[in-house]
Structures are given as C-alpha cells and as structure tokens.
Image 1 (cartoon, rainbow, N blue to C red):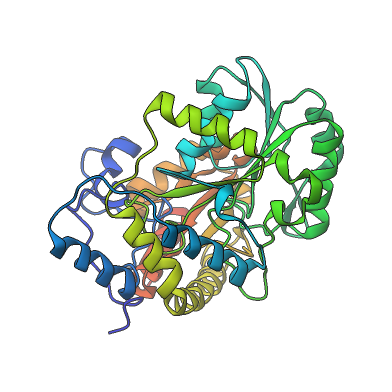
Image 2 (cartoon, rainbow, N blue to C red; image 1 turned 90 degrees about the horizontal axis):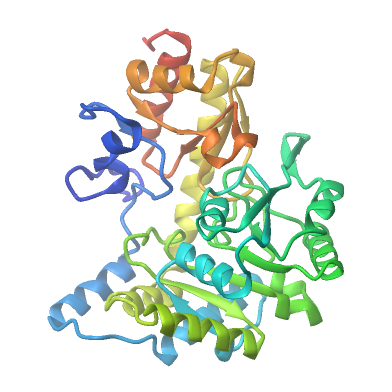
Length: 394
C-alpha cells in the first residue's frame, strides 16, 4: 500500500501530537480526539532513512558520535542541487534543533533589553525565545493582500530603527508564503541600512508546492551575507523531528567562533548517535520520496481548501505556496477564538491550533496540518464542519 495513504496508529508511541493532547488542550479524555495541530507528518520516514537507521541499530553500539565530512558534504550538495546555493564546509555549525540554534544566536549576539523584530502571525518560539532571554520583541504585523501575506515595509523599517536583530520565517509559518527575491532584497537593504542582524529560519525551505521556488536569503545577500544566520534542518522535510539535528550557516568566521564558544559554555556541541545517519540518508538518498510526498501534500491541500470552504460557508483558507499547513480565516463566522476551540474539541472532537498562538495578529485564524493520509484528512474536515456548522455529514 502507498505509505502516504496507509493510516498508521501513532497512539502510545510517546508522540507529542497524539499522546499529549490532554495536557496541551486541557482535556481529561482525549481518546476520540483527532489531532491535526503540531507540525509533524503522519507519514513514515523515507525508506532510505529507515534502512540506514536499521543498519545503525544492528551495529548495537551507540557511543559518542560526530558530524563527519560526509554529513557536511550531503548538506552542501543538497543546497546546491535544490536551491542553487553554494555553501562552504567551514560555514556550517551543527545543533540539536532549529529552536536551540535560534536561542544560541539570540544569546550570543544580543544583550538583555535589546530589541528583536518579528513579523506576526509567526512561529511562536521566535518571540518566546526573545522574551525568555529578557529581550524586547517588536512586532511588525504582516498584512493580507490578494489572499497572501505581505510585509508592511514602512512599519518594518520603523521597527528596525530600534532593533539589533530580525528573525525571518523563510518560507513563512503559518501562512505558507514563499518570499520573493524582491522582498528578500528589500529586507536585506533595510537591515543593512539600520545595521540589524538576520536569523533566517528556513526549515520549511524544501517543502515547495507547485511552481514555488525557495530562495535562501543568504544566497542573494552578497557582501552582506555576514549579517545573516541561516538555520536549516532535514527534520521537517523528511519527518524526523524526533531525531534532533539542525545546522546554522554563518559565513563570518568571527561570528562562528562566538557561536562555538557559546556551544562550549552550554555543553551543546554533540548530537545523538542517529543524527549523522539520518541526515546523510535524507540528503543523499531520499529526494524521490520527497517529490512523491510533495505531490501528496499538494493534492491534500487543494482537497482540504475546497472541502472546508464548501462545507463551512464563511471560511477562507489561505493558499500556501509551501509547507503542509493550512491557515484558516474564520473571522466571518462571528465567533470568538474560545468559542471556536470549544466547538472543535467538544463537538467536532478535532484538535487544530488557535491562531493567537502565533501572536495577536493570528486572532480569527486556525492552523490545520494536512500531512496525513487522505482518509484522515477527510475525517478531520468533516469534524471541523460538524463543529462549526452543527451539521453532520450524511
């Protein structure tokens, strides 16, 4: 059977998505809740990765491991092939994940009470990490034009005038927006003008839909590339979130030295024994799986958008240019977020993410994960429709 259409039972596997719904949503009984929230897929990892991990397990010794030259080369070759971006071995620093990587950059290159710009609605750790490190977050909300998010560059520049750092979501989560070269060029121009460093989270950069093409901002930064820290990982692309591995690409030698010193000070320099194996098998041998998965996701998204808007009049679903996430505008239903969430969880028995999680700019929205078999997705859509209309599908 097609692994993208087979329904796997993920309950009781220590899955955050499936086994922590009660803690996350404050429910005592979650046995009949369908989770469509956190961003991991209900698909098995690519066969090449599974084989490589099986072989690694068969070796039976799990001592200290390091990211070898083959690991670095696999990243370099992948970026050159997929994004026409030529990076060098020395630019690469490995980390346990994108979130700790961003945290390390914030702590290394900003001071307490420095200001950090984000563009909400956006991935919550961007502003949470800054706040937990006693930095001040400046919000420059995105605006919707022709059904897609765009940057209000006038407001963005006003915020940059006060800031030390900007965190870019490239592509955008939760809206699925793929920033154009012109937009990225303007971001670079303004950050250069006001001497602001850039963290670019590009974890969704491989998940391009249709004719969309990802542009790493550092690729077009030219002489300003030293102000950019690019955060990459195979984990979102190949459904490996539990095997924690990520990279920071930093072209400036002195900045890399500071990040290496930070890693030594915090004891974060070593990764788990499965990380090198999974990473190399992903980038060297799993591209055919990715292309098939993206076709499945594209079909799922078109199906979900059509069905949700048909079954729940008033819903507007933003068409993503990347990712497997749907950003659903329910503002025309004249319901509060609390009301919507109660209807979804108690009537529909389905768990989506509330938009306010992504900042106040996300109020009136829901985020739905469409990376699942069509049977699961169809069931989830029916549950959303039941929750928001009170009508059960015949």
